[in-house]
Length: 537
Image 1 (cartoon, rainbow, N blue to C red):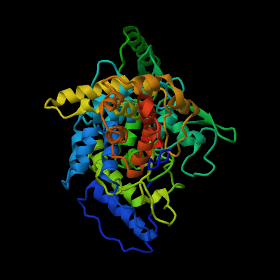
Image 2 (cartoon, rainbow, N blue to C red):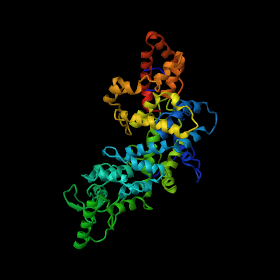
Image 3 (cartoon, one colour):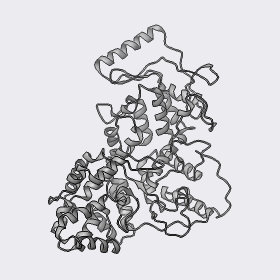
Image 4 (tube, rainbow, N blue to C red):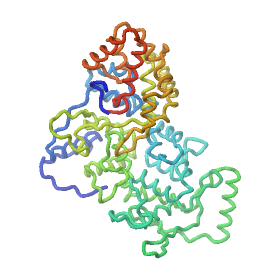
């Protein structure tokens, strides 16, 4: 390893024992609330957070989080050299206004919503983020299988890919929309958490129990009941019950004539391969009504808030993110409550939430803990966490970093730059399947990924090509070792080389003067296969 490269619920808040509270303004912004409550907890613990990360680290971190790639050499250098006080705000706003933001958020939300299902909502999500569709409406679209953006119902994939196993469908909906994994309550009441009973599992399953695949389209009948056996062996009729205990009363069952009419209607829509309408009383519509009701909408909001915080800060206020219950207290209960209330107040605006997180001092902290004291617990957010890239981020960044940086010099035609970046993104897609998808709460690079980075053919042919449009083609034309090393580190790491790195790499090149082309390939490979290149830090 080269020196200098980085290694690879609302509850009652406990009484404050130290650090007098200062009030938070009623009209506080998201970033102010985050820093207020986290600073308060750090003060109580007697811990001073680390300083802000370097400009080079921040431009890389922000670009990865908002555009799903590392910055170009020109963008990184320009940011580092910029002396303006508001440059971080300007960078965030510029990236969030770009089409890359909607594309990358669609990728990230698709992973959250569809992980392990074998399907994708990316087309629907891309359109939703392009239009800044509020999260409550995205939830409504997905559960009610309505897509306002396309003729084909892309929003229906969440249910379509899981409808053959209603147990999995109910649990997936509970996890991604409410932060609750209720799988343990299927066979018995949860042994450790009083919140989750069998009634909750089968209550959630009941919201989907009349949903089925009607010849490739999602449909819902007006009849059908879920029954289950308790641990004592008694049969019980499941209530149509939300996770908070809210129960819906249903109208009387349809008579035989009405059932036959509905059956014929569904058969007609199946023949036409068209999406049938929801029944007059829809169980899935009742789930949406429950989640967005005045009493339970904060239960819905806090899950998304916690997911987003986990993505951008490396951990949520509640971990694991699918364990929001009374036995798993948030690290900062007042902050979780404030953010959930604010999210609802501002109409479930995901962009506003994301922007606030990235503008906070908490987000901007360094990931390096240089103190002799023990590194603080992650849940205090005193130091930034290393975050493994998603396969799409990693593939895009590797492909971009090994492309000739001259291709991304400023141009008067903004659309041309977008087109060039799209070209690199498209070219990177063949690499995506080679890399491991990280999940919250731990990451281990697979043996297959390690072997790919060591001697994979795609790495040699796609990333270490010496054509003029590649990084190695650019380096070949530079005269001095200093120029070559500096250009390579800026392209792949979005920062200048440290003096120790420059010295070591020059020694390496000097020792191979008769094999400069091979030496440069090895140098670039060492940089792109380093752990620093794999993480957002």
